[in-house]
Length: 380
Image (cartoon, rainbow, N blue to C red):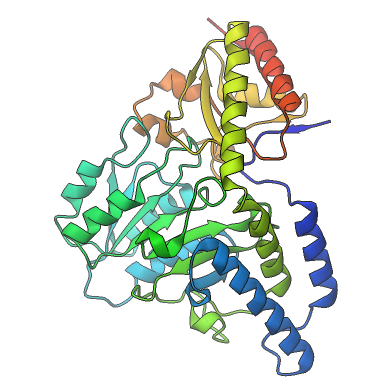
């Protein structure tokens, strides 16, 4: 039987989500834009799901733009802000800790004439606020920062970021990549003070193919996709009531369970590390002491991270050697490097991520397998 500890990459839909999705696929198949009764029924289902989703995300339904996932939401935020006609300059502020969806979009925006500034990280894996302070002394078109880092679990502080923006450049919108935040830390859009927040359903147990961008009414945004004018023109294309219902069902479980997951993940992390200590396995915790607890980054002395991932995979135990979006492309871990870790430590890094579906027995088994692999494969 497999042990899945890569929930940051994706997680299994729960029975309630699967039941909702299957039923909706069978029953709510009409186009919600159609004027006949079947279309109106599909529209009603969609509107009901949107209300539930918005309630869980702490926003008004009109603030919710449903997308295909986190990458589309991030592209919509960055391109929709920076490529529109505006009095603000085409200047983007990001950090060295961004996910590839932000990092690569920023690189593309540079080819379109935008200026991008990549701010340093502290040793705790969050944006250097002094550097952000200095950067905001000049006008900027957008600040885009990751809220919970997908590799280390480091959490940027929205309140301090918003306070800096309000004091130094109040017209500059803020986008937070919150793909790894929902369900891991308490979050509410309307209370955050930011202008745009992106998220992804499959990180929370929804099927792949649905995400969201939350937009404050004060934030002007150009659409990327044009056509029938769905979602108030922000994202044209036939809307998907079954996926929206599945996302609502996933949020029904994930958001109320945020604090319980944090407690469980913290205990699993402590248990795993205690068993490594007891076996004499040499490692370094790369995640900061204050983090989103479901994400644990560890580096093992004398052992490449990808070697450990492959060794455990052969035993049907699944962890990661970095972001799933980048690990197969053979790129070095720029986030850990930006935090100040040396090359050997970065090379030995893996990410272990927990969910409420994991068990104590699974953590014991994973720890034993890691200890065995380290003794067998580590080089002095």
